[in-house]
Length: 370
Image (tube, rainbow, N blue to C red; front, side, top):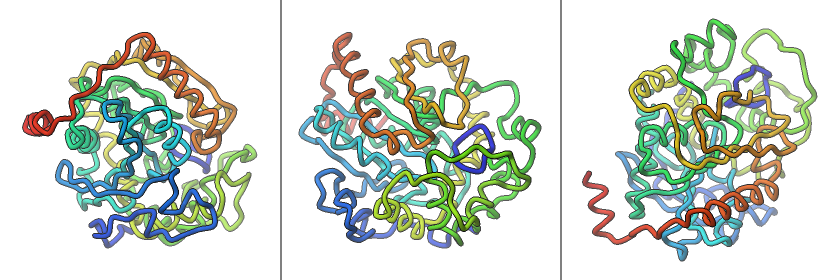
């Protein structure tokens, strides 16, 4: 998700809208030379299927022995839980119970057919229900790209379920007086991908589905040389481009995990998140717009997503870190990302240690019944 149309990184409907029964996300991708993609690799766990909020989510989990210190990692578009492969082992080793869902519309998670099933109320409701499933009152939530947008929205709608926030790339976006798509249409025009996704539903999805491997190969790049904006819908052109620019963000075997996932799921579920932007604007009309939780915002110095000058106004307890990278921060600079996150988390624990959450079934059942 991004706020500038550069044809590189963001911020027909797939006929199968139900998740496969196996639930073995990484297993289903097959074995590759890179051990990180192996279903038996300690670095990335086997998935389980969790029923929450009327859907089933494919969830990858590590460090369960550290119950009481939950941290939930939320991917963006067009991503997958596997985008956090470098963070999962580091956070588990640091004593956290790491929970990484494929959110609705992605991987082997459910893919509802109604566009409105992907609004911020549903997406945040999935995460709240996931906490209930594990018996947690609250957790630290981490988001990248659209995942950051979901974490911002979750924190606004359910502030008691979020104790700390770490977001990457996409800062808090203030609501403003006009619906977001309406505003973007006036400022950026109908070919801006946010607007195009809304005004021409199904068109981009079909192109992405037709060129899945090529589109993802062209999308996950770094050190892309600057270019003048071209007419037309840039992401459609990107999907059709035979020659990628810049350098790959990941190995071929890692990219194959993303390709296999989207060949199975299609892109419509993820694109439907964009198609709820104005609906989200309305759903957030009456909430307190100030986020009080301690927050770490991580930017990439070469990311095309615009930084927010007003971030401290809406997130007064924010600390900002910048890394020398583009949009795919946690994959481009995994060690630096891990260090920034763990240092900040350690500092917050030193200031105000988090009490252990009650994971008893009785407590969980009380939460779920509310």
